[in-house]
Image (cartoon, rainbow, N blue to C red; front, top):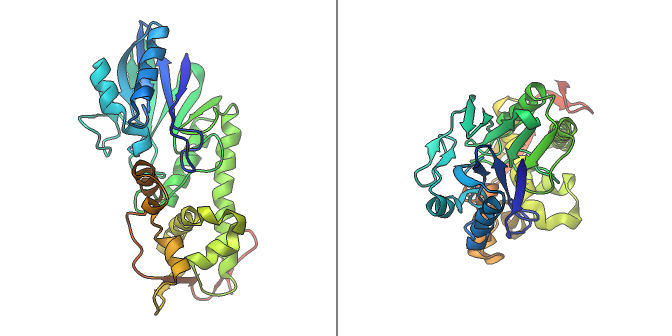
Length: 317
């Protein structure tokens, strides 16, 4: 049995709040996946939920190291004595390394642990075979799409992770996401995510057919102006796509010989601490990689002699 305990931290980045999950692993033992933000009443809610089901929390597992998923782990561990398990690249307290690509047992329950880089490089996804359920953290959300932002994330690893989930877990039934509602048609949602990334890359390449553009230029062409409050997040997504395309020799970048305008700076290097409280600003910065300030304005163009086709592929000019 899986029980959702949602943290009381709703925001633009966390949607209705971070989803923590309590798994009944049999033999009276419970596992918490993603204990959430450091909010004491949320930790108390997790413990109370376990008590109401006659479970002792024996282990805490993290999908990835973003603060809205892991900050409560030390408090929950201290209260229950449960060890914390995380990807080897995650640094949270005295976390133990998860057995990536292997079955991992808590009580009478075995979960498969999958290395799932992309949203972050320290991301893991869990698969519960008896329920054909995936616990995807921020790799797949219950609504909207996941942020993939450098330097903590990268687009091609993310797309590879999505394809792997589609191929290896075609029989998955349910997705327990890091945010938003539980997803009842796992294969459909995974295909939707794969196609969304393909569509966004086609839009970027199509925009570049008209000549060199900066990231703010592309943002304004591709995204709805009524959602300009989200443009900084969208800019980081576009940056992730462009880094991949540049690495593949499909686009080229050069520095623009002028300072950024105030509007460009607001899109590329937003100051979220001026708009949100310190905790929320820290979550946004971690999600969007805005600790990496973009020092120069770059202009991107299709690599010489190549044009983009309507489907986003490239062909000789």
